[in-house]
Structures are given as structure tokens and as C-alpha cells.
Image 1 (cartoon, rainbow, N blue to C red):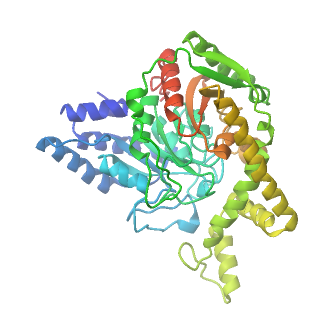
Image 2: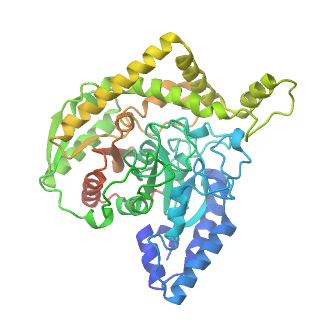
Image 3: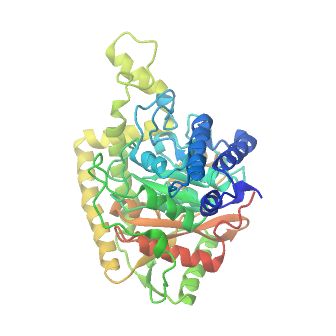
Length: 485
């Protein structure tokens, strides 16, 4: 039995039945990381000692007959912009290369409380600010399916680690598609919860009004298991709202016969790879076969989503990055004479080109009179985009679209054509702008490369997207089976 090929659910069951120990599971995955990650570069930091100690505690619980947590013995990767007490948290940047947080993020506490085994911190675009995981100070991550291609971003380290069987589950963050786009590129499942369902306490912010913490798994049930653990309000995060708790796992197998599904005409008419479009249309037909009713709808303001998002996100990036100046914490230049020199040189040397571009754009918008007008207009258009979705969700349960308009691009192509790279999030961005929940689930392959289907739902209606994705996955038989390597 190859332990690393087991699903998260299978791992817990086998540990509970004493067919395998948590220590064996942890060692098998650590061996897998040692075997392949030198080339893959999915991890920035491996927490071997802490993981082995956590596994021993789980095995002691089993021995004592104690109740096991929902994640008992399951190996988890954590995107390196989520803080972990006494474990280096870099955000993929030289600026935080040696930052050791004094506390755990709320989502980390919840994973530990449920006996999850954190194996390390995964690679990402610097401060989660791009779409390819090539802007990391620690080098690019490769796509396990084709190592000449990117895994997507910014959560590319997490998706690559899950796809390559280095961990069973992983955490990511999603500002404008950073959970769903890399999930699509790596052929796994990525969940972006509604804004406010999961605490952001301990998530290093990129854009406070857009960021959410999300989950990854090789199938819908596994990704849902991790979401079930981390969801919930938090006294430390005012944006984490009190909502009625739903047992997502128990509701997954609900019949979707009669489910009303919307297919936005504006989305399907946007420029995209014809192979991606065909797979999504096939998915829509499959839902009809399962008894759902699929109808075309209009989201008239969808064409403004990218511009709206960009104005908001770079402005909030400029604000979020202002604290990194070599004074409080983070990288500090050694060669300076004045305070201005300290700030300028620390930021120049400590931040990468990609994040600097966003800071410059955001600073211009926030500081110029003309820019402020555009920023204010972006929030008005954001309200219109949200109203479009509200109207659709009055009648429909979920909305289908491609996850990305393209297949995974080759390493280095983003440098030559950054516009195309940014465009890979065009179908994801509206869910962040409107605060919706969404999931990317594999819907097939084109020339050996994975294609993702995005299913969006209304705020805090995660159960709709999860049961739709679960039914689709079961019918198509892609979840976790075609692992590629």
C-alpha cells in the first residue's frame, strides 16, 4: 500500500482502525517530499520535527482510545502567507525571509485542534500578488503534470503539493482566483469560501476586502473536510461572520435533480481556448443528464469586473505593503544614512518587481485626485456587479463557468506576456468582488492538460456548490483518480 496515494478520508479511517499509524503516514509523506520536492519546489519550509511530534500525539490518542479529531493524522500543507507560531512565514518574499511569527493563525489553531499534521509551508507568488508562482523570492514552483509549465498562482505551491501527493490537503488564499486558477492548472479541487465564512486572522493581507482563506484536496470530499474544520466566526476577526453552521460533509450526497443552474452568456462569449469552452459546455450537458436544469443568463456588468478589481486590489496592496519599510520588522538594508534612505533601500532591496508594480499603481490611484475618482467609481461598479449576481441567485442555485480561459502556460511565458497571465483570473475575479463562494473542480483534459470547471454560489450557500461539484465529480470519475504522476 502506497500511503501517499490514499485520500484524506481514507487516511483518517485507517488510523482510526489501527491499520496504519499517524507516524507511518507522516513519514511516508515526508519521504515523498524529500524524493521529489528538490525539483518541484512546492515547499519553502518543511516542519519535519513538529510534524513527527504531532503524529506521535495522534497515535497516543489512538492507543488510549480517545476521540480523534476530524483531521487525525492527515498531512496538511499551509500556504506561506498564513502565520504559524515559531515557524518561519515568508509570504514568498525576501522582505519576510526570516520572519518568525509569535502566534498561530486561527485556521492553523483549528487544524491542530482537529489533529491535522502540518508538514510545512508552501511556495507562493510574493505576498500572493500574481498568478503563476514565478514571482516567489524562493524560485518558481513547477506543475507536477508537466514540469515545463506553471502550477498557477498565487497558491501554486499548495496545489502542486496536493497534486504530487506530498500532502493530502492544503490551505491557500484567494484574492482574485488564487485558489481556483491553480487548482484548475493542477487538476485538483480548490474551494474559495464566501467572504466572512473563514477567519482571516493570521493571513498576511494583500487586499483586505477581497482576501479569503480556502482549501485544496484531490477530490471534493477531501477539500470539503478541511473547509468544515476552518469555517466559523472568530473573535479576532470582525469580518468572520456568525452564520448558521452546516454539516457540509453530510449534505454532499444530496440529490441535485431539479437544481437550477445558470450559464452566463457574457462569460461564455469571452475570449478563451476553444478546448476549455468545449469541456465546460460538456459539463453543462452532464448536469442536465443528472437532472439539473441549465439555462443561459445575463450578467451585464461582468465585462467591468477585471478593471474594477484591478483598481481596488492595487490600492489595497499599496496600503497593505506600507508597513514594510525596514523599521518594525522584515528586511532592513545595512547601507543607509538617513531615515528616507532606510525606507527606500529596504523596500527596493526587499521587495520583488511584481509587487512593486502593484504598489506603484495603487499609490498613484490613492494619491492623485484623478485616481481617487476611478477608485470611488470602482466601488460603485462593484455594487452593480454584486446586484447582477443577486438577481441571478433569486432564481438559480449555482452558476457555471470555466475556471480559467486557458490551459497552464509554460514557465517564463508570464514574463513575456503578463497581460495573458493576469487574464487567467478573469472568470474568478467576480466572485471575490461580490464576496461569493466558488469551487474549481476538474472537468476533463485537453492534450494531457487539465481543465477546470468553476461553480459559483450565493454568499454562505457553500452547500449548493459543494453538492453540485460532488455529483459532477462522481459522474465524471475524475476526483483523485487521474493523479498523473
